[in-house]
Length: 368
Image 1 (cartoon, rainbow, N blue to C red):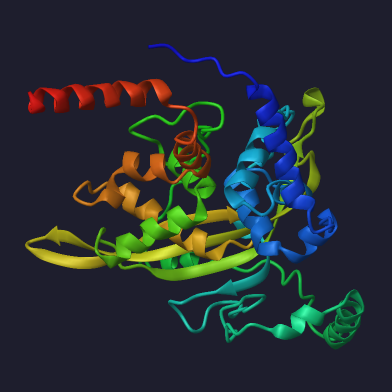
Image 2: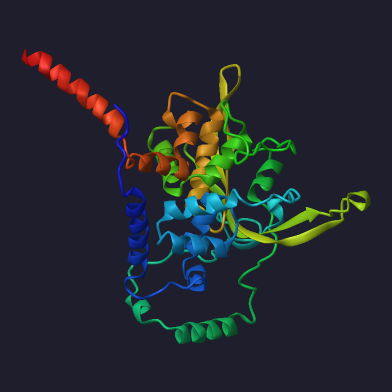
């Protein structure tokens, strides 16, 4: 059996695309890119994280193009990213240089520099605010004016400056082992396919690019018993990281000769995970391990979940599905998983007819 040629296929596809545009425009209202960028901060950050491309305007364009369909927006932005030339590599970004706008610890009440609540929905009542239905640009300007006046004598709401890390103080107490600096060039999963056993740099890249819901669900499974971790948020910080590139004039290049090209907003989490270890003579003691999460934008739930899965995969306990790196890393990628599920909508006429023929023959033999 071969494929049957269908006349008018191209015309049908063109009409389908027209209908898609009609559905986007049928109410006679066009979304402004600037308004998407200004008003859908959480969605922008999620799309940038899953796309591995930090550009708020392009993320807003992808959201508009995809009509708010998150998986499609990520697909569009990753496809665009693949066309971009890679002209420079930044210097290593040290998260200790983050300018903090939010920073909390669930492990300690008092931390050096204090807890900074920042912007979060954690303390809201989760009740629909119907006043937003009548909100105008003028209301926004008036509220901002009053807020900025209130903030004049206080700390700048965007940059609270650099603050020490909680884990550094625990290391000084000997509760954590010292981390050896490793500046080995990381593997790049966007240029070379993921391999198994994976390196930690591969795992962290796949986790930070992973579909937010999938990463969160698997981390939740770890805590519910499909893993062996009982984590606590040691420190969660949201802020801006400066990015530098080396001088292109290599013959005159010095270590301090670099160009500042901007900053990126990021969420960083260090999860504290107790681990019982044997110390000899049948004695045991509890030590702490760290699970690490880092995402573009303010993406806190995903960063926490990423930290949980990082430690789970580092242990690699295959008694649990969440310790199996192939199971986790292959199934959290939004483009891979959405693409495979979506391809089921495409023609499978030949394979299905073949299966149907087998069923018919089998049934015919049974009736004989």
